[in-house]
Image 1 (cartoon, helix red, strand yellow):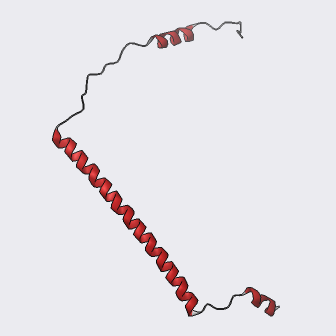
Image 2 (cartoon, rainbow, N blue to C red):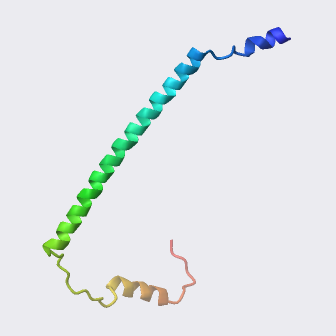
Image 3 (tube, rainbow, N blue to C red):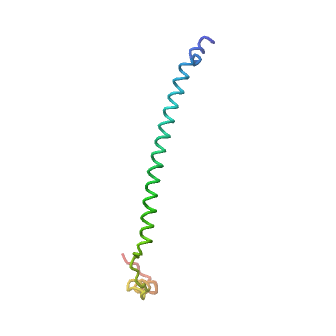
Length: 95
């Protein structure tokens, strides 16, 4: 039975295999770090552009035109809806 189980058990890893695995992991980690670094640089550029645009807008004194707002009387549809709700319930059902 031990002989049969030895087929399933891989041989111990050699230093060359371990070195290859380590190199592969290092390369993958280095690619991830470079990718993250590049993404962070773009985020910094985007944030800088937004800050500059906001500062320019504040310093330029240009403001959006703001008019006065007022509420109007209920719309006709609101009145019709209220009238419909105030009607007494009819005993007839319409198709």
